[in-house]
Length: 105
Image 1 (cartoon, one colour):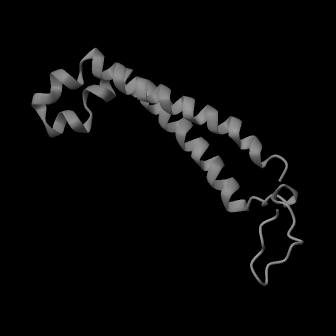
Image 2 (spheres, helix red, strand yellow):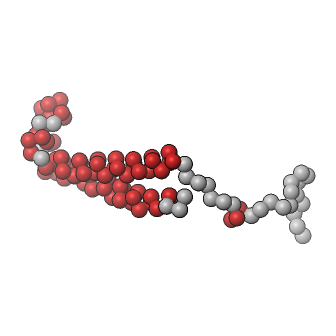
Image 3 (cartoon, rainbow, N blue to C red):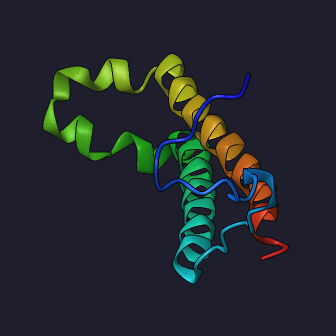
């Protein structure tokens, strides 16, 4: 027993797996590349900046609230900021690997 089709619906609809894949637009490709570059730069900055003594010791947060100085200059906070940098680098490398999705388009 086959289900009945509503009036006006054609029985000759092509299967979904034969549909041509959507081509990526140049804006999508550019956005993916810029996102990779942004993640790389941010990750490298967050990884190394906390360990640059004179720059980190005179950052904006310390001048904003001097009572935060001991916390912001601690090794733990510097390590946490560097950890965020490592996470950004991982995201950047995963996105670079995903850029292959545009290779055939």
